[in-house]
Image 1 (spheres, helix red, strand yellow):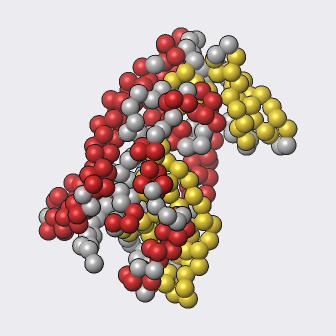
Image 2 (cartoon, one colour):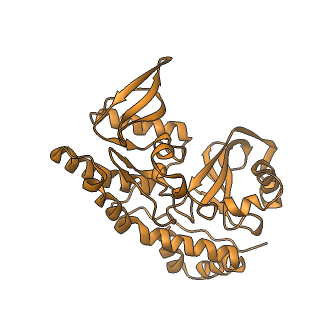
Image 3 (tube, rainbow, N blue to C red):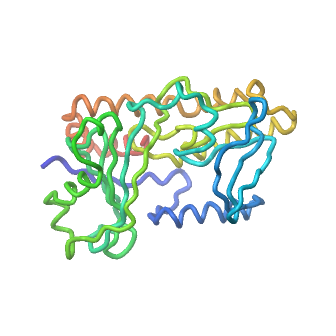
Length: 305
């Protein structure tokens, strides 16, 4: 048995509340807020970018069963890690390497004894430098899952579902399962870390943001914060491009520098820590033990995450 640490959330200077909800509700909230802010929403399945003379000129999408061309002066690729925009505009030689990618599995579990005011992270040797988690979402219900770096996962036997089952069989978890625990809505996905250098995020007629750009934190696997930061920077650059009526890479390339200034140091530090945990697993236990004995250290570390 390793060391256990409990620490309070850092709520920011203005305070606030923390909530854990199923992803589908969170996405719906973001969409609602966007529409209220003036966005024209169209439900569609993006098929591919429209590329004319080397410039992105819109998106080809399926809408109500038919394929339509949606043309735009500027396309902002915010369609996640499987982005059709990224796949078509970023050169294959610039795709993320396995050492800068992860795989993750998330499920919703019922009939589990949850701790309503806590989110739980488990870091243990079998999945380092990844972790498993349990997030409460209701009475005896939780968001549960695990993730690990892709190159490390490829060396293992078995799949993510087996690793999750092994996690559920751990004594500390198994004793909390009521009537065996029922898994629902199991989903797997890949994550592209923001720690790989020299990736292009701006193209003639297009800008990539968030997970589509590959701005995921290499240590936590979190992407929403960096997505919001990059989206704000993209909006700034897009506004300048609209005023100049110039949507070339040459005119918008400073977006990459802005993202580097805002995000790179954190990505670099997180990747260094992730690699250290993989090479020296004992560091995890040592760090948790130190934070348990020093609440200020714990608060500082968790705030940085």
